[in-house]
Image (tube, rainbow, N blue to C red; front, side):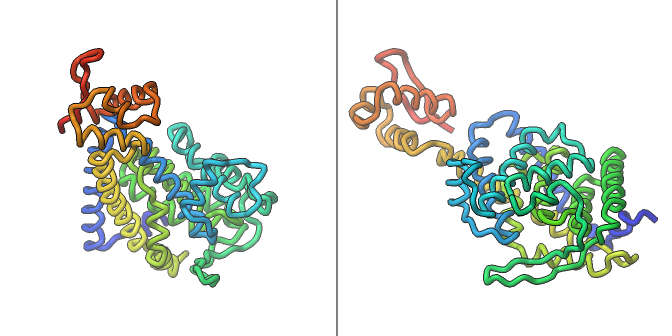
Length: 356
């Protein structure tokens, strides 16, 4: 029997739970992809927020200490030659790979060469990892959990170095074949791939970070576009205990017929369900409050709300420190973003908040 299929031998109750979760996720996927095609006025800011959360969380899971605010500041003032600390090096490496995935996921195949290239890019700025970046491990490693008090706990042992090549070839071939056959739902295939990747732990370091990047890549390649706008990594950081427990539940029977990944698949799908709920809440807030506006534009919007209808001359009196040119650009932006309406022309033109 196919060893991968054996791990997916779910009991009836688990199978029903999985079907329910997949149905929910796919229903949202369809709705979200329509939203993304029809309008994008809120998406740029959502992705920016999610990117910072993803980088911060994924590096902290592995022991880094930078806050999301520090990550944001580092990205805004990025100078590669000044990356002195390992935390900073890891943040920039994660950012680089995440941006590559966002921009080019359709062209990135799931193959040994590309996975190794992504690993090399992930550790590009980490001077400590120079010798092994992009290469499979040559020493045994273990999955450990890092806790804030500085304690490490062994979660499970991983594939021995001499078996990594064959196990990765088998996993990559199986994944690509199953995606092509379309006999197993892609979310199940993705969940299994990530579990196996973490179990093999093919590289000396960076496996956890790369597994979360590959999760994003696989979801995007299978048209789950919403993952760009909400952070899977942030949820894993918040549920680290459950994350490790789900992995350990399958790992305890590794290399036996009793190895099943029910707990992991449920964790993975439930995480996507939670992310969808968070994204819907964030998206609604952005639509209702204009979360994508800068501070100046928010003040202009609030002034129009309180005093509409208003003319450009009203704004120049209210905001004497802002040039007419800038006010005109802001008004045009608010109009383009469908926040305000322009009524009339030239000197008689007035601005009002757009009715919803």
